[in-house]
Structures are given as C-alpha cells and as structure tokens.
Image 1 (cartoon, helix red, strand yellow):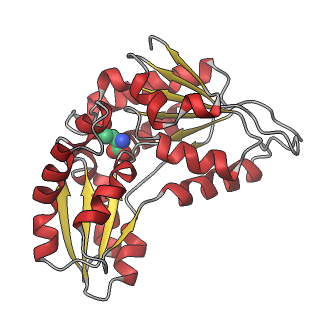
Image 2 (image 1 turned 30 degrees about the vertical axis):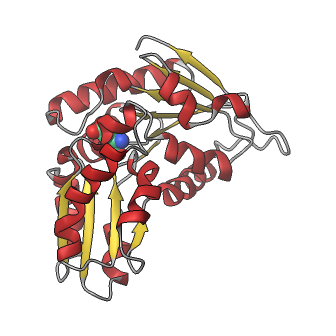
Length: 264
Ligand code: DGL
C-alpha cells in the first residue's frame, strides 16, 4: 500500500522544527506539513484547558490539509492534551515527552536536570513518568521561563539567552548533574549555548530522534507509509505570524522550502 498523504506536525511555534528535521531525515519520501502556532506561543504558561483548545485547533487544521498522522511536536501539548486528541480523532497521534528514562538509567552521579515548561513539569503525565523512572535519582526540574520567547524572536544565540541559561542552569550545576534532559522542542536550538555553559561531562539529551523512529513504526504498523521510493518530498511550513524566524531556523532559502503565512 502506498499512502501519499502528508504527515502533519504542529508546535506552539518554531521549536518543533527540531522534531520535523529528524522526521524529514528519517522519512525523506514522506510529505510533511508543519504548523507553527507562534501567535499563541508560549503554551507553557497557559492552563491545561487552553492548551487542549489550541491543540484541537491545530489538529483540525492539519486534518483539513489531509494529514494521515499527526505529530504533536511539543512537550507541553503532548503532556496536557494528547489523551483528549487520541480519544477525539481517528488518526494516530505521536507525542513528545522529556526523555527522563534514558537519563535516569545512565546517570552515574544519580543526578539529572530537566529543563521544560511549567505546563510540562506540572502535568500528570510527566509526574507519573518521573515517579516510575527516576524515583532513586535527584531530579532537578527547572522551568525554562523566557527561553521560548527568545527563540521565537530570533534571539537564540544572543547574550541575553546565554545569561538567562546561566541563571536557569545554576541549581543543576550545583547538584552536579551528568545528564540534562531537554523537555521542550524549542530547546535543541540552544545546544550551542548549552555546550558553552555546561561542563564537558554533562550529556544533553532530547527526544527528537526517538519521535522520528516512533513515527516511522506507527506508519508501518498502520499501513500508512509512502512507499514511493527514491523521491524526496518538499515539506511545507505555515506560520500564523510573520514567518521570518521560522524561515531562518529551517534555512528555507537554502533548501527551497515553502513557508507561508496562514491564519489558523
Ligand atoms: N515547544 C514547546 C514544548 O515542547 C512549547 C513551548 C511553549 O510554547 O511554551 O514544550
């Protein structure tokens, strides 16, 4: 069976493109559609009710565009809304959650840091996972307040971002973490700064690659793969504000990607 319909991906803004990249790399002959809900970013400080409402809005748009599967490329939306999405719609949903399990299993110091939004850290799903996998570990949870706003305004490599990160990471460094879990899809764009600030022995983990692998597995299991061999599909990107930051972050000009402003 060959299913040429697109994979729909959404995030509260440009950050989920870190997940999109992994999916596009693993499944180049799948058509991908990316929705950046930058107008409503950040989700991380909103109520669960509001996060669910926005996730439904994004899902409806992606379904209108004929998506065969939906990737919620946002930890905050996954941990707060994926249950509702799965029980409301028939298409399969792939979510992203902070990778606490591998970090907890590998940590020699028995101390790991989780940088995520308030919405993710206070969610039931995150609390449960943390209780299961990190019970004997010192978990330093830090809300990355302000980071999404800096990335959304194109300041991911700025001095302001570096200063804020230094402040946020302080309790983690004091606890001598050896793993830092990036619990927000925006944060992989801060890796160059993080590497500058963190000691060499601290490993940074995010869930992008795992999400791409899971997407492939679920497409396979449901007979939804696009088997058209050898053809690389051009992705399409949509933003509900001026798409300049989105275009920059994916280097749209270099790759010839189409980025469109769309109200949704
Ligand atoms: N990129 C998102 C996440 O993974 C949400 C950030 C936000 O909008 O607060 O959590």
